[in-house]
Image 1 (cartoon, one colour):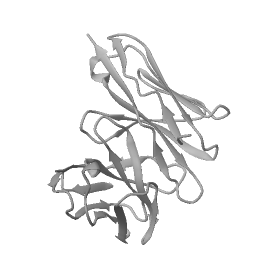
Image 2 (cartoon, helix red, strand yellow; image 1 turned 120 degrees about the horizontal axis):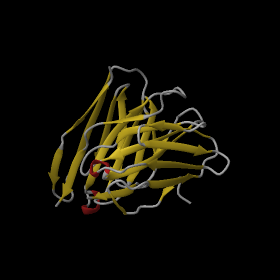
Image 3 (tube, chains in turn orange, brown; image 1 turned 120 degrees about the vertical axis):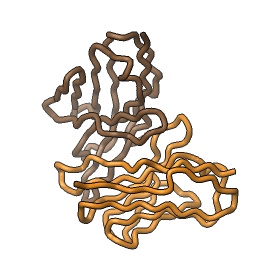
Image 4 (cartoon, one colour; image 1 turned 60 degrees about the vertical axis):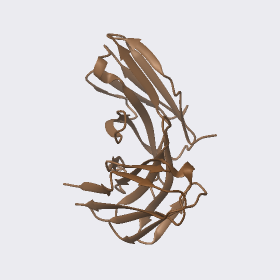
Length: 114
Length: 111
């Protein structure tokens, strides 16, 4: 069966520090991968999605970046965090066929920038 | 216009009530539709897929209207445990199957 791992679960970082969140998927090949952010009391905002290794689409201009160095690995990074980067970051994967496009989420990383 | 729009609520209903949520989407090429449920401080989880013919799962009924580009979720006989945020989800085709989530509708079911 497929599983998705996301870490760390919680993170407190000072303003201006770098960020690296990692997500890996097991049990499937060539998944679509996503990074979402959910600010407190708000909905899910799509940040990045990837349909293959090295293929990243950015949805929102920001100081974050994403990379997909391996088929089942998706990394969210920042060189310098802002206070506004605080939020709940969720990695997700979905299949490519029309019958398997539902998204499965990792447990999320709660980031607080102080 | 947002790609997926929902009324944020909150909907406050008594136990046993019937409540309906609607969601509209802008991309007419969208191919797959879902409702997710998100509990406080947790990740979203699939509640049910939405099929063109409509589908029912116990107290939950989902419907899709492609012509008007909206999706609905009906919850009958609400339970306290139904309190959560319900997310409308649309997956577009075009070789990438980008999955877009609505901002969610908050439901509070009270005794």
